[in-house]
Length: 405
Image 1 (tube, rainbow, N blue to C red):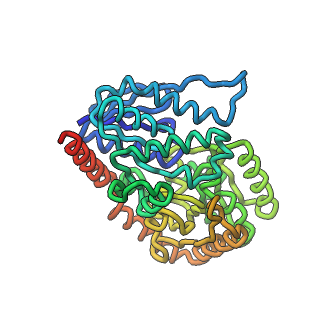
Image 2: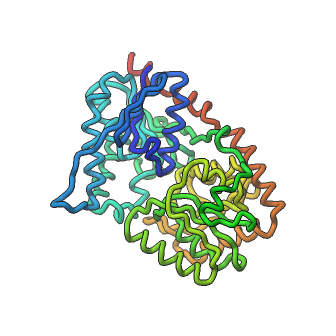
Image 3: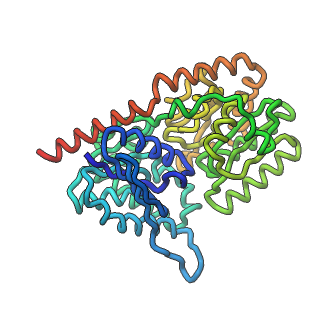
């Protein structure tokens, strides 16, 4: 069996949870079957059963100016260009809307089964119009076309399965298979190393609250920044936040951080996506990890933090509800959502509630330690990549068997 994994992100070009998922899934699958990873970028490598093939989209600059819709057009162009190297695969498996049409076209052209993993859903991310402009209509169309045609849809959580049925009521529930994200338990382990902390200006002797993620509406980082004013005075807060979706949200983030620093000078903003060893150090030494996402189909960063024994305070939404156990591995913070944007309808209350739960763990280090140990145990028992790869291969086999009837 030879599977074609389609993805925008692949190491070293990983900036989000979907890229992390494909990185580890491909590695684990390659222990048992042949895997071709088709990604964006100039990549070409062969290591055992794992074959990586990168490609570049068409250059679509308009009179020297980059339009917001360019990302959507580039995605479609690359999906078309990837058809030729897919001729030798037995099954195609796509990750995110950026490559969804590659799966749709491969099924039509080569007659192979098509699996689609949803890491998020475009209809539930109305703020993407800010990032993609008029290209948002194209991303909606590409995802919808692929979702309705896929032979099987993998949801990364039970909550995501419910979201799929809500966004695409035409999809039959039996076509949706829940297979969680995973974590490399050997790689993500608590460490006492603090060189990365001092390198980025974090005081390892002062407890700190940590955020890790992209600067995007979805991740809710600005709500955590707003919460800083409600935390105990001079709480050290580390914002490991880079890769802003748009110049507008980058400017908004900068303004809010400067406001927070005016009354709390112990805010450290690491304005880039750090390396894996560095982020493991940040997780390992954090007093509290905070995930304030307003939309999160799974939330792999919570797994990473839990694996490093960090207690978690996270918004009570989406797949987070299936990862973080309230009162056991951390605190969940519910909030009222706007039905269209998914943003908190009462943002100040959400910020205050986040601060209250974070403050509880800062003021109760024994509870925080207990939550951290329970988080590691939960990750070990439920989220290993080997089990996830086995479930995925079994789904491939079922689809190939059905297609050969």
